[in-house]
Image 1: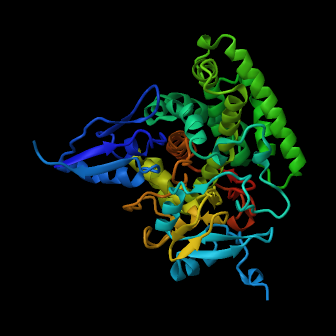
Image 2 (image 1 turned 60 degrees about the horizontal axis):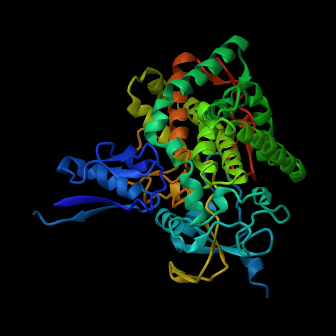
Image 3 (image 1 turned 180 degrees about the horizontal axis):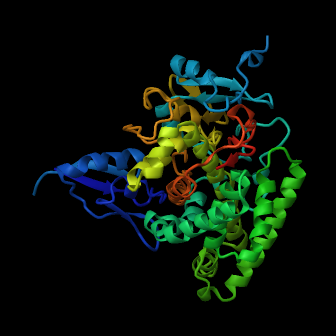
Length: 69
Length: 406
């Protein structure tokens, strides 16, 4: 199963992730930093999630495999 | 024999509507190409999409233009911005860069920019009204391209309308490439002085100012996170960076549409936001007007593409070359508003310095290319294409003027 991870210490607030996958990411109103609003992407989200990862200029995003609990 | 003299001289001449032809050969032969600069120094040029992105994202390279080895493009003129009281954010490294950037990040989120759409459309419609009143022919750059981004950023900063002309004029002088550097520096000083006055004024009573300067005063200066000069430097950068870049893309994007009548026609009849969004991304990729951004100097020895970039050596990852890499963008010289590519263009740069105003710029461009073709559907060039004068040798690509009629 896939999980989306974001390293907020690296984020530079360009908004590429929200542009690529608005269903998965948002930016904090007060700090502009990335927020993952859907950590477990469905199959329909994966292409957008990958585009967000590729587009992030600060390499702050990743998609990792996790074991189902 | 002096081996440096044998190296290709950078920068190369940029043809009007494509990247320097030399890039294709370099891209095919190696990751990095050593080039000679006009000041006699050398630097490493990168032309492949993947390499350009990797180098720009690598924090072992510094953006500090004051450092020995930073690629200086002019033989005589230092980077004008590096003479400012505070080093502009685009020349800073981490952790300094992070502190400065975070002071502004909330202002340019996608959601924030979407809220600005009515304001942006209002500015654009007002300028189109004025053009229609004045009548054809006119220069789209001075009448429309430049006023759109400058009016928007000055409004967001909270600069009253009566002072806009002052900032327009100074910003124009700062970015002019054919002007005595002393005059550019004077304009920079005047802009800084006036901006500081606004910051000090708003800082006295920041809660009443619902604008970028008011929020910087309340949340950054009064908390001790930024000094007056740092806040001022950020505001100066916003005025200057948002000036010529979007203006040039408006002009060159319009030119692309006029030369591709079917694309113009499709945008004119389009009511979905998807097509105009794609068209804008193609304009950004195709023209890549801020072509020389991304100059860096190595802080340590870095192994890359089969060579060692030594500490103190400069690198030139070329975003224009990356955006025309045929391995990523098929037939890169073709302007195609429906282009599909797996990877995004790097016209706004890559790495931590990627344009903070990119979503604002996109919103401005989308609004322009939604409204302009619909409101002036018979728009066309007032002179033959061959008579258009491009700016060559500047830090940003563009047209000197775009005479249009309808």
